[in-house]
Image (cartoon, rainbow, N blue to C red; front, side, top):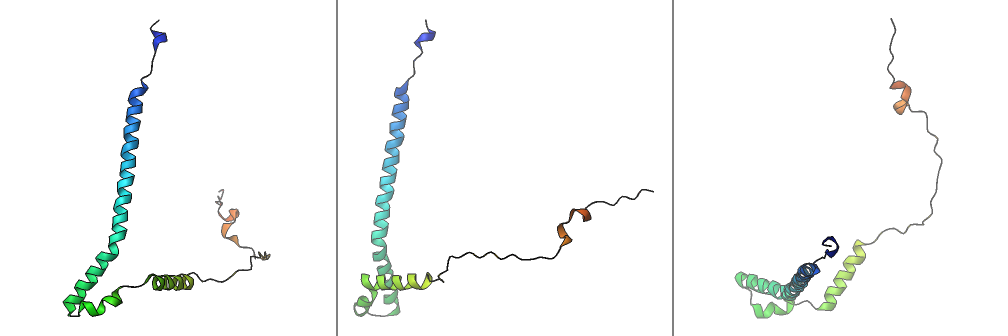
Length: 121
């Protein structure tokens, strides 16, 4: 009778699976939030570094602030020009030609030269 009363405890497995799923979702969400802030503020940090460098050189920051900011259309034009320059290649005709090449006999892989010549005395 006791053999027929075998039961499986799925409650523990469900609790562990739910915990793993929640931890996974939270980890991914926090990683995405951190990446958002990194990508958002990296340009501002770069501009601050440039301004500090210019202040060390003695250049007035108010005069050169207009040159630090690059408009989006200029960045798009430069990136398009770089893409078109770096990705150029010859257009191929896509025609395969097979030419039969007659080769002279080459004994480099001949099996008869790898045999041992045993002399019988």
